[in-house]
Every structure is written in C-alpha cells, then in structure tokens.
Image (cartoon, rainbow, N blue to C red):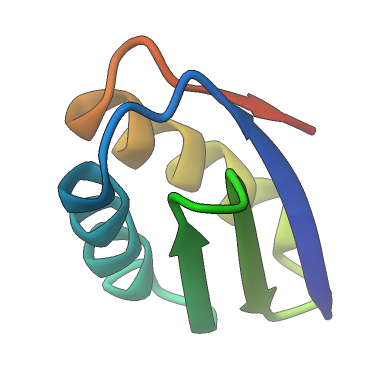
Length: 72
C-alpha cells in the first residue's frame, strides 16, 4: 500500500532527509520519501501492518522534528 500524507510545520530540508532515513529503517516499510518543498510524505508499506507502521513513523518523525505534524 502506498499513501501520501500532508506535513505541517516541517522546518528544513535537512530534517526531511533525516525523517526519510528514519522511516526507511522501520520494519515493513518498503519505500519512503519526505519532501520539504511540497510538505508531503509518501510511504509504501505492508498493507496488513500499515496502521502499526504509521504509529512508528509518527514516533520517528517526532524525534527528528517535534513541531512537525503529520495529517493522517
């Protein structure tokens, strides 16, 4: 399953790159991209575990950028 989410208050391209790297390390994620320019995040992950994976994604993103909000 591939889904795109809107990001609110993503401050810099460096943070976007760090978030992308952290998301790609999560089990079940086959691909991820975080764009600072469009303020969007695209995640491709296992259908059966998608909700659980998204909880881990939110946690990983909060570590990198505490002010950034993911619109689920």
